[in-house]
Image 1 (cartoon, rainbow, N blue to C red):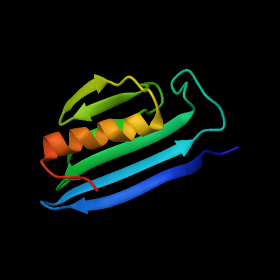
Image 2: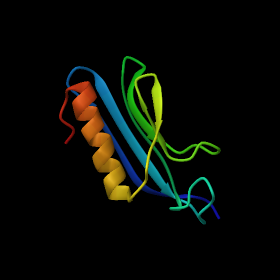
Image 3: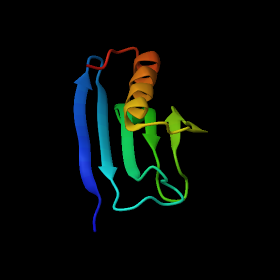
Image 4: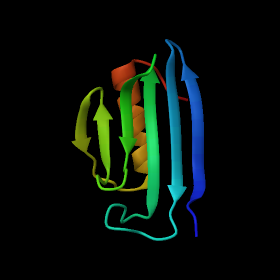
Amino acid sequence: MRATLIFRRRELLPGGIVVDMTIWKLPAASADRPHGLKYRLQAHRRGKTIVRYDNETGKGDHRHLGRREFAYHFVSMEKLVEDFIEDVERLGGRHVQ
């Protein structure tokens, strides 16, 4: 069974910031993804990452703020999106709808 797309949103903010959020429901949880979700939420300007949250295989939940990478404590899908948007607004200086 394949992953099921459950959330996708793309938005262009003033100042050329592109916000792209995608979340999939996996057929089963795993050690890297105990919540059963795979996700990639990113904001970039002219190809340079401002903020990215993802959980690629082997790395688990983490976020990138510019060039720096930090562990991320996953609580819920709603909290994930909320935290990401807060970082975009704080670091990118633009309000996400």
